[in-house]
Structures are given as structure tokens and as C-alpha cells.
Length: 443
Image 1 (cartoon, rainbow, N blue to C red):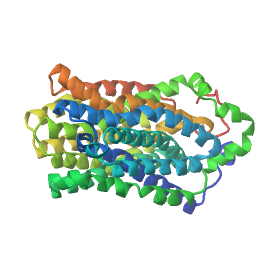
Image 2: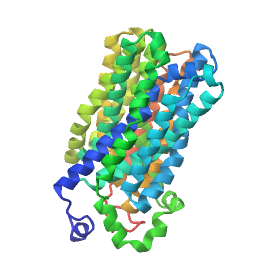
Image 3: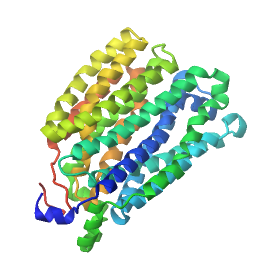
Image 4: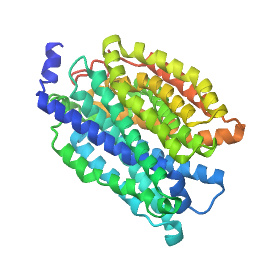
């Protein structure tokens, strides 16, 4: 590290670093549990909260109500990103987790359509928008905090904890949904059982706020504030980020495309698809999600270490190519011989490949932008990519399957995202992150 870097990134006590990493991982995991648990119960929620539909229409309404949160995510991401780059990571993260908790509680308490009529879907959509607005700011601010506390030479490993927290939230959501679906009868599940995860999840507000309030602000951000007060206007310029960093934004958008497709198609859509179209039970679908999430939870730190040692491109690019190439054969095996074993096999193989680009992706996004616009830059790339390729993916894949008549249509969607991801990895900028770097300077 140069003398200038040492001045800008001061020494961090080990206890403070552990506390920051713990709060980022736990808070982020709780936040994504609240956001993601909706997918496990989206069909039930749609049936209770929206007017009666045909089976196909109900599935599309369910995915649309899931996807509406992603439509508002870019707005939340940009606004919270600007706030995080102005007021600090800690302030933004504390506000974000309270907003997510409010949306989750509203879902858990909303009466059914049979009781309050049109107010029910209105409240559900509003609650999902609150969740989406909150989630839009979560990734960028939490990742910025995490990476700015990471020691030199271990940024990919520490960044992989971001992926681990998301995998943990998927695993926890899948486990909770499986237990409820497997142990409650249909009447109990629809009357009160589906509400339990949301009522439990609403507790993340006070718990998460307490955890995050005990963490010091990012030293790298504080050093930037101290040394670069004269660039405050530039730091807060959204237009300036888009104008001055088009390559970084497009490259990161490609990486986000393959990462979000792998999670929202692989971990969410495919289990629901196996349950509704291939005749497997709803509880079996949740087992598939749990299997894929556990693989990611175990493997992402390993791939983060590999990226620190051998470089991100060497770790990410081959896995993305294989992920796209094997999507067709893996899905074909599941479609032609649907079973618990084939679904879990799909998730294990897909999850293993996904871990090689999930693990290093957080560090890749964070290091694409300097500290003064880091949260804003990440928020734009991540949330636009997540909206197009993640949240709308289940709806688009349901539509593609219906229009083409092919149950293998999702494989083409996965392959297309892999092409974008590979181009993003090839084009990504390796930037040594420190606050003293001029805004226009490239590494």
C-alpha cells in the first residue's frame, strides 16, 4: 500500500472490523429474508388478496406482485445511494432496515380480499413497494460498508460475505416455507400460517437498527469527507456518475444480470415451476431452494478466496460460460424426469457454478467506483439489473413458457444472461479503491 493510501484508509482496530462485518452480514441477511420470503408464499397471497383468476393468470399475477418491488428498486437505490454518499453508510443502513420492517409487517397484517375488497391488493402492492424501495438501497450501502472495512488483499473474501448473507436469507426462507407447507393443512396455512414469516420478519426493524447503530462509520468514507470537502457537489451528481462512468455501469450491469438471473430464476422460479408445472409438491420446491442456497452459503467464501489469489476474471468468467452452456441440459433433465432428486441435483450443480461469480461480484461492483460515488454507482447498476433480469424474470419466464409452449424456455433466458455476464467481466475495470483518486482517473 502506498503512503497516500495509508493516509486515506487509516488502520482499523480488529474489534471494529469484526463488528462492522458482523452487522453488515447479519443485517443484510435479515433484510433479504424479509424481501425474499414473499416469493415462497406468492401464490397463496395472490389467491387471498387478489380477485379470482385462472391458474395461469394467478401465477402471472403472483409473479407481477413479486416483481413490482423491483420496479421501484432503482428509485430507492439511487436516493439511498445519494444519501449514503452524502450522510454516510451507517445513517442510510439504519433508515433502510426500518422501512423494510414496515413493509413486511404490513403484508403480515393485511386482511384478505374477501374481508376488505380492493383495499387488500392495494395494501399488498404498497407494502411490496416499500420493501422494494428499501431493498434498492440495501445492497449498495451494505456492500460499501463491508468493503470499506475489508483489509487489503482480502476484499473478494470479505465481499463474498454479502453473497453469503443473501444465500442465508434464501436458505432460511426455504426452510421456514418448507416447515409450514409440510406441517400445516391447507386451511390453517391460508388462514394464518403464511403470515407467520412476515410477522417474524418484521422484528428485523428494531433488531437490525440496534445492530447497525453500534457500528462505527466507514473509516474510508470518513477520510474522504475530511480530505475532499471541496468535491461535495460532484459526489452527489447522479448525472455525473452516468456521464463519467459509462463503462463501469454497463460492465457491472452485465455482471448483475447473470447474478440476479441465477438467483431469481435458479432459486425462486425453478422450484415454483417444478411445483406448479412438473407436478412436484410445493414443499419439494422449497427443498430445492434450500439445497441451492446452502451450496452458495458454503461455496461463496471459497470462491472469494480464489478470486483474491488468482484474480476475479479467472474465477468468474469460466463459471459464467459453463452456467450458460449447461442451463439447457440441466433443465431438460429436470423436465423429462421430475423428482425430488432431479430438482435438488439441478440446484446443487447450478448453485456450485453460481458461487464462482456470486462470491467475487460484490467486490467487483464496489471497486468499480471510487468512494465518493460508490453507493450511487453500485445502486444504479445493481438495481436496474435486478429489476430487468431478477424481479421480472419469473414473470417473463412464465410468459415465455406459455408463448413458446416449451418448458425449456427458461434455459434460453439463463443463457442470454450468461452472455451479458461474460461481457461484463471482460469489460470490468479493476480500480484500487481510495478516496484520493480523482473522479475521472481510471486504473
